Length: 112
Length: 115
Image (cartoon, each protein chain N blue to C red):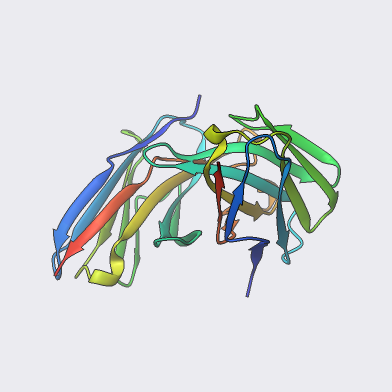
């Protein structure tokens, strides 16, 4: 079955790097996603990685994928107070299930 | 710009009321979803629809039903609202997985309080 796990909370100082981790269990994952949710809002797609890649960089964001360990991470460089939000990882699989499976979300708090 | 719109940001309903949550997408997506978000539990799938008049149960369908009469609109119905249905409800849509990436696009959420 599908299961996606994340730690619930991370606190960093402004200017430091943040690393948010995620583990998943389904080996048939095709794409893995990171979403950001600001207070009172819906989810916005931040970035994604295809399962045959091991790294993707997009400005301040770096996604690392270790497919052997089923571990995904999101690194935010030079973290700003505007990065304070809940970050969700999600996976889609090639078994026909059309819905993404989401982790519980990691609340990132950025201290000035 | 792609858009998923939920009809209400905030709703307060009484126990036992029938509640309708509406969602509209303008991306011609085949698939639409209703999730429920609760602290520490992440997003849990209630129902989804992969075509007009087609629906499938998600992980927590009890107490809910859905309706998809038109491709762009997906409604979530609470037949008889209860206090344990107080939550944030998120609608999403995506295209068929056969086309590759299936990232979901989300509405802004409806915070429902049942008193």
